[in-house]
Image 1 (tube, rainbow, N blue to C red):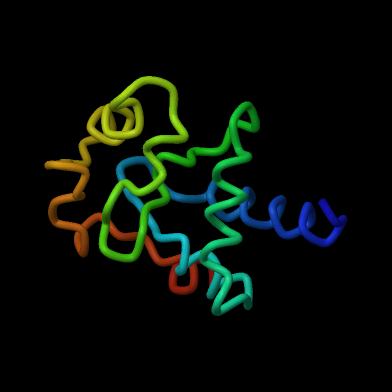
Image 2 (spheres, rainbow, N blue to C red; image 1 turned 120 degrees about the vertical axis):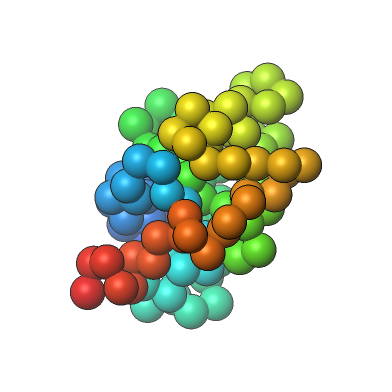
Length: 110
């Protein structure tokens, strides 16, 4: 990977580490905060590479609250289990009350 990609990934990880316990954000919300409005997919790539980096990747979902990254976690339901352990309700890979648990880095970290 190019050095600038790794720098972007590190910036993504720094934002993800600030997501509060029991809250979630989206790939796109992180991308917008970092000034990469169309960079949601790159944020997803960063989350896929976050294993072993002490990054709460389970708290990053798609813009509709779907656990689209769950297949990158060990086991079948680990992402859901981690979220539920934090009090986030998930039904059929969909976060319930998404608007209530959504955390916007642009608003919180302005």
